Image 1 (spheres, rainbow, N blue to C red):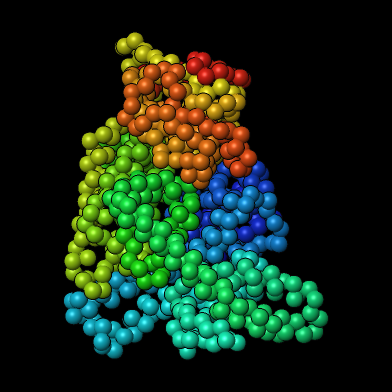
Image 2 (image 1 turned 120 degrees about the vertical axis):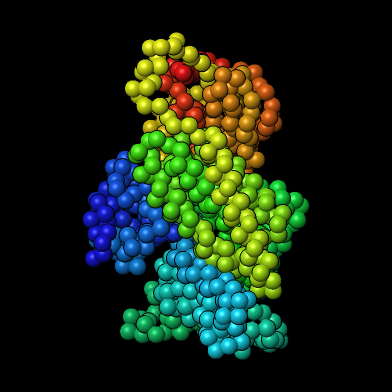
Length: 609
């Protein structure tokens, strides 16, 4: 047992015991559980546990955020729970189609991300060493280093074959064999004549062909295991699966998958080509939000596919720099705050941020500080645009934080590309630092607030309900970021109609492109976030219509957005709408004025300053 034995025992106990665990994987910072019953997990206990940053319940997974030492914790948790290879039982958890799709994608790709990044770091290291003349690429050591760096990418179908079959319930070694066959040297880029049908394809460094092939091979394997006699199934079933699926995969599925990959790449290229800077700004701004809900890898997967195909990807570099902005902001807060507890949290958070792991910074520092998190998102958007302007691209998968820089080294121009990547990284830290240093103010202690209330008259502002429906407490919202008041205090509404009105006179500061969330700053300074539904960002604006634009000044009761709530619900999404005061820390108290049913434009919330 490792050094995290006690933490592992506490985690297993509070997720409902090992009998409640169906499966467990991990990404760079999170333990990703599938639980039989999430309702019996003690989420509040886990969130307050030493060694746990926070808990997120999203994409059909119960995600316990640990930090960059999560692989060590994962090993101890598996040992405590008696989990072999991350699989606990054959019990199936009921999930929506979208949740199941996200779970499968995570299960196939996440186990390999760490090693993939390590190989990318080595590729960047090799380029720098060759540039400096310390390890020439043509020398013996240079050739060996190139081999170990390139192997993961070249034989990626082998790794994905193992992961795909394991996730889908097949024999992972059978998946490895099919992946290896797709990489068989004599088949790459030559004409293969199969009964008069000629195929010329290359499958090394690909992702889609083996994954799509697994969706045919695993069901076939399961069927054959049922009908082939036990005495011979051990070797007959694999032989039949290989004999049937490999020709099918090489001749039909593989070319189709490669064509699909090319279409996705062309689509991304067209989006990027339409306005590269806008693409950098938007992805840079949204990246930390995607990290916060744990679906960032799924979003960036098409870019990874193109990168694996050998196409430089500027958008992959864009997502590498938000961690530097977050790090710069936390350094500024660490230097500026007089709060000893916050200092103790901020110091390890910015150290972790340097290596690209920003959850401790987000959940421990910037998110509790309210507007600081949004400001770091804005800074990350600026840096994303700067990255595109300076022509920074990723040429290989690499790590996070400073370890992402080697991935941005162009083998054909290593000196200039390295310099540009370093410039953007330094600029990101500076931007984050300056924004936080100029805007961050320590929150007042309860004693100081009480003293102020005795000296000056309390000011209050009343906000009206933006929707008609049933008022809910935030703690009852099925989203950890809202129910835990990580974004601020407020209330939620389960709406009965889809017209959203302004809760006050103010300015529209944020209108998400998907129109599912709108941020308003009242004329008296309250920062209000209206988040229409849960996980509705995945609808990409479908069923939502905006009646205002970002920067507009609106009057209380003015129509902001309309949404077809019935169609959203038919898509499987909740329309429960949190209404949050994101600068809660600036107020003495926030009081909900109504329970039960409420109509839009009716007084709903009072903020006291």
